[in-house]
Length: 104
Image 1 (cartoon, one colour):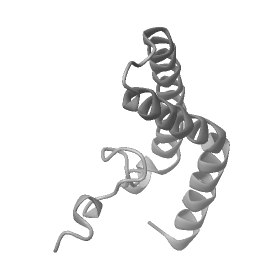
Image 2 (cartoon, helix red, strand yellow):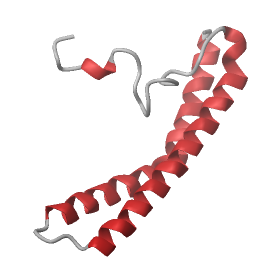
Image 3 (cartoon, helix red, strand yellow):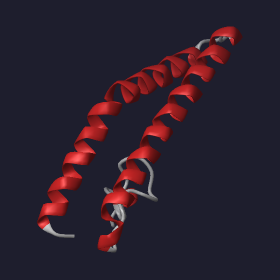
Image 4 (cartoon, helix red, strand yellow):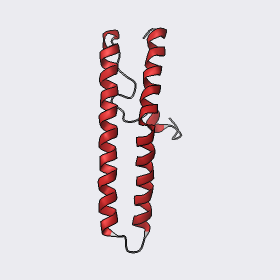
């Protein structure tokens, strides 16, 4: 990938992260709320069900945005025999990141 393409990809990635910031923050907040509910002696089943639905909805929205970002990357850079970093490794993951801090 040329330096110009790297710069353009970084701009696209920054735009994606900025556009999904609120979604990611809401998701983390709801996950923490769910963890707190499950730590109660008698969790409120209505609350846990509703929160579970909210979390699933946020994950779906985020996945759709991520897929759209990857499609844009493929359309823009696939002729460079290159794919978007993290395309098959999940949110923010790239090859080799799974074992950081574990001796690799």
